[in-house]
Amino acid sequence: MNPVNEAIQVLKDVGKKAPILEGVSTGIEGLDDLFFTSKIENGKVIKQSLGGIPRYAVINLTGVSDTGKSLLVEQFAIKRAVEGEKVAFVTVETPAAFLSMGLKERAAAMGIDFSVIDENIIIIDAASYHSLREEMPTLLDTLAYAIKTYKIKYTIVDSITGLYEHKEMMARIFVRQLFNFMKKWYQTALFVSQKRSSHEELSAEAAGGYAVSHIVDCTMVLSKKTIQSSYDERMYKRPIGEMVRLFRIDGCRMCGHDTETHFMEITERGLIKIGPTLKELLRSVK
Amino acid sequence: MAILSPEEIRKFDVDATAIRVFLKALEIIGGPRKLIELRNLTWITSLMEASYAIVLADMEHKTEDEIAEFLGLTRQTVRNILRAEPELVLKKLEGELREKTTKAHTAGGLAKLAYKEIKEGRDNLEIFIHALESASQALGIVWPVEVLRRIKGLNFPASIENLRERLAGLVIEGKEAEKILVELSNPVNSPSELLKEMRKAIKGE
Image (cartoon, rainbow over all chains, first blue to last red):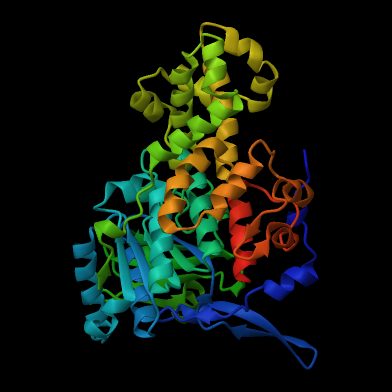
């Protein structure tokens, strides 16, 4: 067998082609400062906020149902669109017309005139078109066409789990192919995945298929918890029966990141906000 | 908001890809004439089934059950096709082709080999030339067909030296083919890569 000589490269040469590490603001209050980079100043290493998710990262956003995954990616899409950038939104669960309604609502809640941004969000409706959902080459060729035609920089897939329903044992094959595609086209991508188990609720365990989180650059986990005891009441400062939502970054290979568990809020108008850490809350209780 | 219209969906053509794989597999075993000589055209059916199975499994990630249902085969036959080892198949191909009962793993091995060739841009050259001929006449660009005719039978990846021998004396848009070839990286992986790189060199891209 012939060796693939092209695959062997010296770091110095590869470094010339490496993209610059920079943040992409998400439009989600409290999230952008959870990613860091390091700088050397006067011989000391200084931690510096990236000001958003790392550009060109492929991020897996996972959580059980009703934790705010779709809201979060919609908010991100609107934020990028209002900055004048093009976003591809591959909707696998909600048909385009209904997604559009949700995006309008979200934009209004964010105080953004929808007509200013609607040209910048390009919806690929895999929920309505069977071939986009069932045939990976059709989805990827269509996405490549959209990226070239509309000069798209950001891709959202909600959800990747919908692409391999009834064959989750093949999840890694699907996700790997999507991941490689995003890298080839220099996309900053958010993949929503449906977490199948609440057993390890703040980890990527069972995040939309077996070991999927190993493929992506970064995983963010959303979870929810019902206050059921007086201990919970004291701990979370909420009354019995109420629901609290939690957020955690479960690894990011592209840059430094916060590792704490944070409170997460979904406002009445449906906006996501990342709040203080559990540690900070406990300190305030004491 | 832009919603991609049905016309903008780039539908993957399973049938066309399966046929390309089938034609390549047929080329690998020596063409239909070889099967006619052996009085064994029954291989055609097995090769077509195997070509579909490989494309559906690799491109569309269909499960064995889904492929079996689509092709009207048993799951075990599909499994034999998908688990075939191309290298082993080639070693005993001549004997296998003489047998009256076709074997799923042999057809599978051939289809896998053909699929790999297709992915690397090496289609059945006879058919490629044939299809290109009428298209090139319509577009008024005839040199690609002439280049392909001349390289018939050449194994790819092909060295620039071998290509130079085949294209000796050919002049394309006022440039000598041999001079164009000098600008290409050695070796050239497939006929389609050869045409693409030659076009770039001619246009000075």
